[in-house]
Length: 253
Image (cartoon, rainbow, N blue to C red; front, side, top):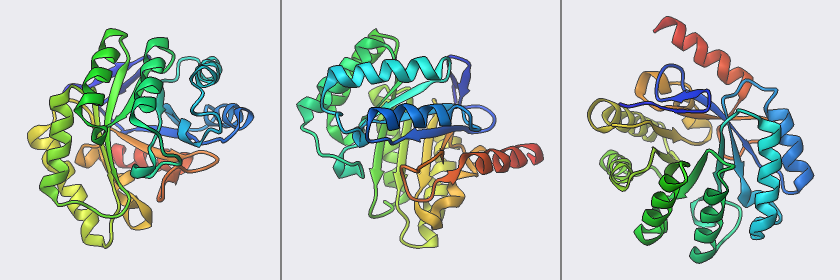
């Protein structure tokens, strides 16, 4: 698997990188959370813009993103609009989703943009092509907040994301039982040992799935999401605790 380096962070080798989501609803909240996050044990920031009250105002979003960059300095930033159908806060028309992600790419303020796989190839492919043109990295993602798909489906989605040209692939699923967590971890190991040629991210959400957030170095997941002031998904672990656990696992490997 080929790792990628963004600013001073290499994703896909060693300890999984910790990403803290910014989920403020107002500009002041967003900037305050950013300032708090950079004082935590973390490697990346994710702005979950779907929480933001003015998320449909592209110019406003770009202005706030510019201020986030000024605070974050050299910390890599992931820009994400998580749609309602994949567990996000708001619904958005595909054309507006495409316009928002495309405008952020053109600004080159975010280092990585998240694009949802099930937006469809007519959205995904042009956005990935644009991101490559502007030297912005991409995460192709898929989220199932109700169930855990079969192991072969998890692998199939991640492989499809690779085929479409994403720099990083990601899937998050919701377990209904402990066995579902094992399905996710088995798919992760299979991906690492047989299929992955670039960094990928997997997680099983909720309390039952929280184990998946700390064993990435063993099974292959390159990024884990930790909570700063607030979490953006069920099962996220506070970043300082997460860092300590990841380091202990690394030390005994």
